[in-house]
Image (cartoon, rainbow, N blue to C red; front, side, top):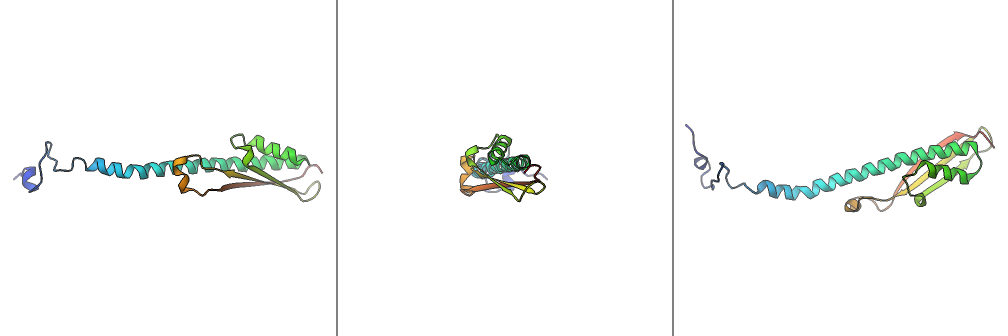
Length: 143
């Protein structure tokens, strides 16, 4: 025994194709969920950009440590850090060089990058100040 759509759903309004009054429900649900999904996707992109910047900072710290190992000039260490981080804003990079002594001792370079949120729509999800740090230590080859 088969029943028609109208017989199964008493009181429901039958529409062509057998649907019963749920024609715009999916559209309304999509319109309600879309901003949340879009915000989450943009936040994920922003996190990816911050991770990329963190990797660049770590690489720049290593390059700075290498320069600090072969020269005693802090300005050339800072230049090596900036050269190793071409995608970062040089005005937001801080370089700290610490040497423990002469030849054979450690030269430590710490790089701090004051990152900003690049995607304005998700700026409210992130702190106003995001500091990314990286450090590198190498043995000094020159005094």
